[in-house]
Length: 309
Ligand SMILES: Nc1ncnc2c1ncn2[C@@H]1O[C@H](COP(=O)(O)OP(=O)(O)OP(=O)(O)O)[C@@H](O)[C@H]1O
Ligand SMILES: [Mg+2]
Image (cartoon, rainbow, N blue to C red):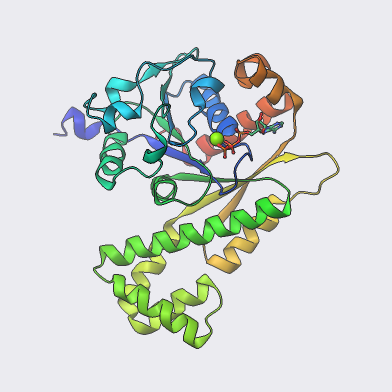
């Protein structure tokens, strides 16, 4: 017979990244978590933007009494101890506030501990807000998520950053799968030969790895294919044409990554107004276009995979 522990479901992890700063990652992550909690899911929001943690402010909490620093400094044994209640029933926050700047790249052991414990938390959904950029911390959290969401705004620099971000995700994923197979040098050789042979796209790099070692190439391709990424275009203006499906298609072609558009979010003044009021937009303006779009996105993800993860 299964023990109660074995029967316990692992939480589903969502991570929100995207390379560029200020595109709306934090406001989207926190809003999605509120939307999921209001659908009766038990949610935890993890602020993994260690250099610039601000989810507590977005949730209207003052200086958090417990944060990830307590784990890093061994003042708390586990994530369960640093969960903070929020104004939303069924939503707890793990704050990254005060995790000093030099911890923007925490030690591997710290990160591994947080990742290990994350999946043992008693929750249905865990939402991770990531910082800008492509540090290993950002990439590793992004890669462990079942719902890996990339936020882009309709500006050339943001779209360009999103491609850099995906490229970094692709190489980190490749490295992880080749490293696990004890074949990190295959990646290095493929990269060297890539330059020599004029391999141009990440997709071609996979072909090259398959040529060097077919079994390892297959394993790497399977790992890449198992990633399911979603793109959200934020801060769209009325006159702008839909962009999500094109970005998703370009990513599929260039990276052989499964990327789907989760939809587009309009620029909505209610977002900034509620931020200034220190009240989450989902609570202050539940009928706003922003809140309704977020709610629809969360519903579509939860319904597409079923309510149990
Ligand atoms: N759809 C939107 N409509 C209007 N304003 C928005 C929208 N999305 C985000 N904003 C505003 O953009 C600003 C940046 O948002 P946010 O802090 O969530 O970005 P971020 O990607 O998390 O930034 P960072 O990379 O610095 O962590 C905020 O002032 C927020 O209110
Ligand atoms: Mg942020």
